[in-house]
Length: 124
Image (tube, rainbow, N blue to C red; front, side, top):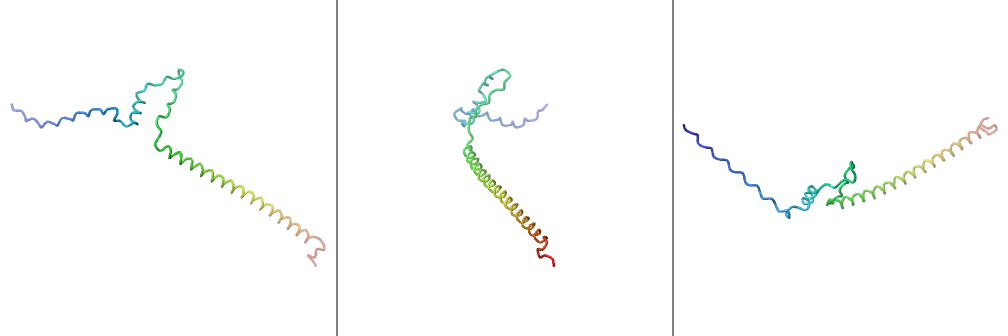
């Protein structure tokens, strides 16, 4: 019996890279690893939810976000002041128009009464 020739052997997989020393990890990764391996904090009483963990790391863009929020609040305050002023002006304008219409109606009623009075000279 003859055996078929063996096929070319596949190249052996590369050995895994040795783990990087802990000092070479970025600080964020080290913080996450420490957080993941830390034992859980005991709850204050049985059945109570565990306390929330404090914010460990502030985002790099937090200062920029705070600045944008402060600017948005200032803009909103300015717009609110403008709306308040316009609303007051509109209310005063409506009040003035109503008073003007009242005066006009009173004048027309007085004129109509004067023309309807006998001897006012309206009829021959």
